[in-house]
Length: 255
Picture 1 (tube, rainbow, N blue to C red):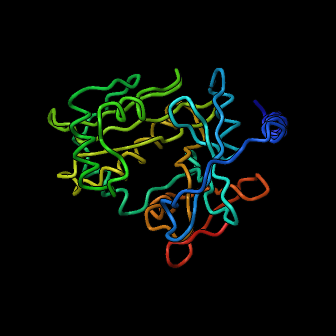
Picture 2 (tube, rainbow, N blue to C red):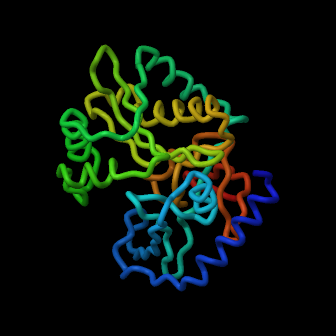
């Protein structure tokens, strides 16, 4: 699809979404910015194809199971899609060291499939890295990560047979979109999260995808700061257009 055709299709979809008059969810504590509330709107497409999802990404939607959602918070629009230009990406010195540090890691790519081995890793990751808002149950694990459309893939990283980490990503029409990644907390010295993004950049290039979507960047949120370290990248603006993002002091990003 040409850029002009993509923009036209995105405009038609934006008008359709607006016409639906989606009702935002009730306010809940924002997971990124203390003292603020979060509200979401959500859709459940009959069939979420790679082309449709590519358009929805550019309308600031993300996928969760068979739903797509986007923030619609009162007085705040800080959640912005961040995408990496995979064709022009150049790793930093630190990222190159991370890649070399994981030279012994093998990647296995397949359709998402829940297993006891991965579930145990997921539980240990949540216990070590999260705030307790997720239970780590089998049902949560299976539904959150593995109830996914046909375009979804799972990558499992192993070193000498030991699982290092696992991630889920979507394959849109001209982009990959990272969904979730979890790893062995005992192997944090490998910087598995950084390695996963570097691997996704390489996989996007292999597939001929010019963009890698890393999800929402939230200015002022330490949890989201790492995304700004992959250059060059673009941020979705209030007008629905992507513009080059550049790092600012304090981990903030300016579009």
